[in-house]
Length: 315
Image 1 (spheres, rainbow, N blue to C red):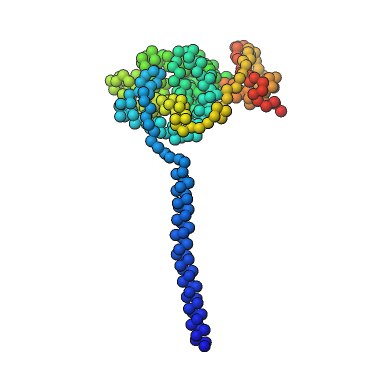
Image 2: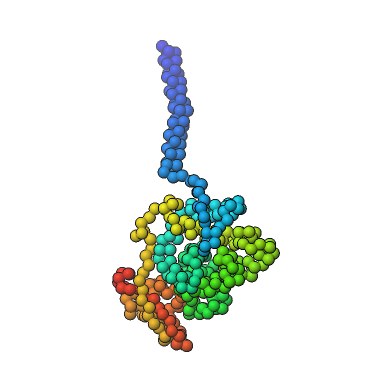
């Protein structure tokens, strides 16, 4: 009897071990298979990364892009893909453009510059008051020496490179001179990146007359194509999968110009007189670089003050 009981116990233990081993062997297959199918489905469902059709008859400032050149085609395709699938950046640019293009467009028109050049400001700064490692500043990324050559006031108290309208006029002057030199708006655009001398040197060295025939460094070689890509994407957002309503975009804020031809000793106090705070004053006048205006020469400035109702009351 004792031996029989021992035998039964051994059989029972073996059965338990066998069941446990079987369960362990089967469990991973079950737990791995289900999530794998679910995850694959959730990643792909409703989203596809697709090649983009090349737009027909691309042009910049009225000048055709030679897409029948395979190299030009590939370079254009690259910028369309990069800028379409960097969705967060492209959407931010569209939001900002709604706010700032109404300032830039009339100046370009008045200066006789093709409207397409507003996209040059987009690729230069992302429509922000950026400062590059080389200290190029503002929407149009103007160097201090260039700004002063074109009549901008630049010092620790006032820096008009941050003034959107004035810096747009400086960029326009530069581009008109470049167009007169090269006879091409496309080459004028390229020279904004590489300098007029730099472009002229390469045209002579390579014995060609078109931007699209030049072998250039990485940055200038991509420059015009980046402008073209953002012109195409921002001009046709639905075509490239961007879904938004007008009220999703950043809105232009109506302002009035206040004439100032004296010293302003304290801009926070100055702002309070118009029902705004110092931060809002600087948001609309980033060219004011300090909390005061020295103005020893009694120069006339025009300070933008938001119309009432655009911001909450000052607390």
